[in-house]
Length: 175
Image (cartoon, rainbow, N blue to C red; front, side, top):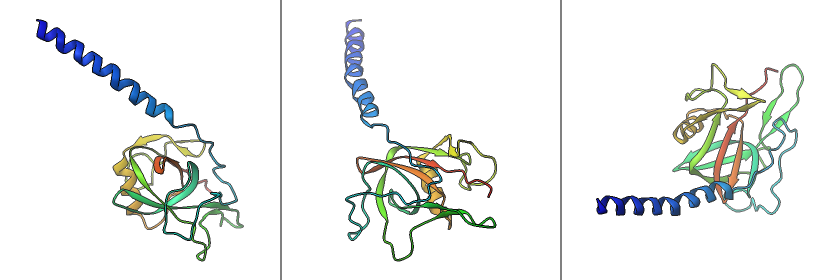
């Protein structure tokens, strides 16, 4: 009986030590302001040196798409909405001569919000509110979807402490 009581006290004390640390990590990330989902300008990252090999963007939210994922590290670039005539509107990346590319590891506990349900193929029924995905999906699906398609899926990428901590898909309007 004494052994059981000691065990319960030890486990309870350990929980009191661990739980605040988990809560503190969740609270440590500030809320970053979202850019305009269909913004017509590329977002800036003052102080980022694009002459070096791709490295992490500063903390914040970027409207972009992932161009490559390898060994848990995603390369991504900014995108902007281009208004066109006769249904030619859509997202575009920087011109070929522009080297605006970032690379950040995908956090183990990344939050991936899909606009197209939790399937590898982003087609079919949607799960979105105000043009952003709402369905929580796994990190593995995010990586599969980013590597399985020859086209890019527009997303809002949240970077904190040099890691991608949240990815929210953008639901394209029918234009």
